[in-house]
Length: 186
Image (cartoon, rainbow, N blue to C red):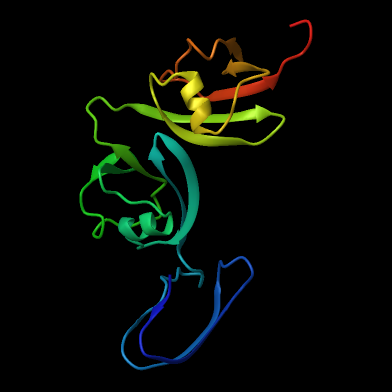
């Protein structure tokens, strides 16, 4: 994020991959904040997965030094009523905690005792498979519903094993829930 105050004129030239600042020409009045630049002249960016548990996880590319509050705003998320975890560690200071080169995951977790869960990829075959934060013990039907999928007419497989979505639940080691078109004779 580039923030300029009192800009009279500014031109920023970036290469098409936004890895290197080629030219920054600014005439300003007052202060301004330019992105951090690494030793090779590239903007120091990081891709961070952000989401609500349970729910969908999305990836965002942000500049290192972006506050967690700013990252949540970019993701369109409100931390009210949630614990905020950065790479599994609960944080309190959303403005003082910033994205670093080591930051991988920011999760909003319901404030409930014993809230444990993980990431589960959910999808249909053929089709797109997306990653969701799902609490351990959630029924497979509920996990599919969170992904907006209906198991009607499909076999439901959890980590390659056909299951009954009405009785099976997400376990701590569940990785993939997949809807597979039913084949006659199966």
